[in-house]
Structures are given as structure tokens and as C-alpha cells.
Image (cartoon, rainbow, N blue to C red; front, side):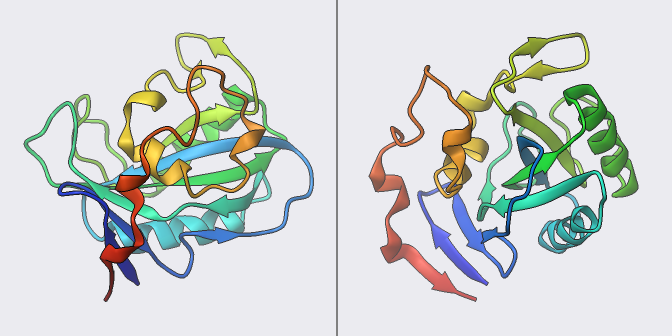
Amino acid sequence: MIKKKIDEKNTLIKTKLFPCTLSSKSGHKVLLGIGGNIGDVLRRFEHLFYYLKGSSLLRIIETAPILKNPPFGYTEQGDFYNSLMLIETRLNPKELLRYVLHVEKIFGRKRLFKDGPRTLDIDIIFYENVKMETKELTLPHPRWKERKSVLIPLRYIHQKSIFIVKERSFSDKGSALYQEENDVKV
């Protein structure tokens, strides 16, 4: 495991599975955000990786490094670990939402209150270039541009150009945040 402090509040963590790149076949390209702050989240991410890898409903294409970062909203809780997974699936957006909510429950997710602590959170950040707004799902994720938990790992996703977003460049967050000299092996 390699930890890299990228600023005073955020640390990037690289493990054997985060980041990684696997082969792509066919299906809709989707960017999932994953996060959690209860228990051994790094181990849970590895379990999630293998669980999803064994699924017939989607295929993992690429993962980003894991970001350790402070909570937002409700701040009286421990730091979060967050990453991104680029997947492909034949599920439509609402079917995929139902599936990821089911996976969250399998991994012990309980929704106690907004922005509260959680074992695992899975968000659909992008579903190709689909734009939709329903009671259950908004695509792209409505707050992705405001969250370092998405923006920093996104810099490490090689295939991000799949998601055409005109409002903001993926590389405009400033290179000072991503200097390599702070790498620490653990």
C-alpha cells in the first residue's frame, strides 16, 4: 500500500486493486463513486471489487486510487475513503440503481440520516452521456463537480473522456494537489 498526502486534509491511497485497469468488452460505460467510513473500509473496497468482478450484471474496467478525505455535510464523524470504478453494464440507469442499492445492503449499509456515517455508499456519477432527473436518480450526479472525493480520483481514470462534460475540464483542479514527492509506503 502506498499513501500520498496531497494536501493537509486529503490522502491518496494505492492498493493492489485501486487503481487498476481491466479489459473492456461491450455495454454502457458507467462511473461509480464508492465511499465509506465505518469499519475496515479498505478491506471492504477489496471485497466489493471481487463481488462486482463476479457479477454477471456488470464488468469492472478501471478503478482509481482511494482518497482519504474529511466528511462534508455532517462533519462530526470519521474521515471517508472514496474511489471511483469505471464499469460497463447492459442494465439501464434505474436497473443499475436498484442493483447498487442491493449491493450496499449486502455490505451492511443502513441509511440513518443524510450525510451520516456508512459502511458503503455507491453513487452513479455518470452513465455514459445520459442526462436524466427523476425522483430516484439524477444523472450525472448533481454534486460531482463540488466533491474532491470525485474530482481527485477522477484525475486517475484513464478513460474519463467517455463522459463528455462541457461545464468543467477534468484537469483544472491545479497540479499542486497532485505532486508525487509526498509518497509514503506503508
